Amino acid sequence: MASGVRAHSRRELLADAAIEVLAREGGRGLTHRAVDREAEVPLGTAKNYFPTRNALLVAAARRMADEHGAAVQVLRETTPVGVRPDQVRELYPAMLARAVSGDRTQTLALFELYLEGVRRPEVREALGEMVRANAEGVIAVHRSAGLDTTPRDAALLDAYFLGVSISLLALPDDALGKLGLDDPHDLGRGLFAAAVPGVSDRCDDHGDRGVDQPVSQDQRPGVAVPGPEVAEEDPGDPLVGHD
Picture 1 (tube, rainbow, N blue to C red):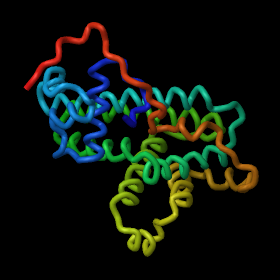
Picture 2 (picture 1 turned 180 degrees about the horizontal axis):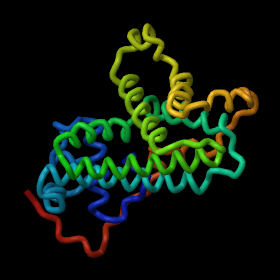
Picture 3 (picture 1 turned 90 degrees about the vertical axis):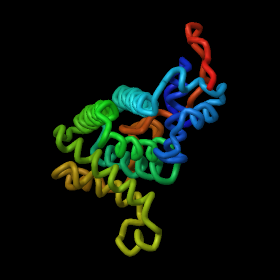
């Protein structure tokens, strides 16, 4: 599982499996049987916990919202005092590289959930919680660096990041090269500069020398903290159903 928050119950284990299925097979591939196979549980288990496909989607969306909230909290707690704007800027190339070149599970599943959210209010609500948590985390980190980032700035940064990510994942390399979109590091810096007015001058004051990461690359806004452990089943889980 690519989930960054340990699954403490059968429900969370199944939600993690649904995220994996969404990322690998898309929305059309999300079935109860596919989730059972991914979670390595008896057939009928997912249907017992989440009777409809809509319930599966909502479970996946809620699970991702929880993961993102946990990641944002870790980021806020680990951002050091005195972090500089140029250090904050370097988070975004790292985030973008991980989203498109590292473990793509969260990114791909998120795109599928955005599509489902257009038609499903419950999924839309969970996505809204995720974006708000991302914005709060971005604002907190940016203000630690003396940047007066507004909620709108943070939301735009989140939206820009999603748009660039899907372009990098979906477009062919030759098109990306011709369009000047083939350098994730430059794009990450550009996203930051575009969403936060006046930040470029403050970053340039420090130049590129001695720039280091203010937080671990595994603790970034909008990206769940990795390092899952083996899931445990709650003692109170109901009996597993069978198709």
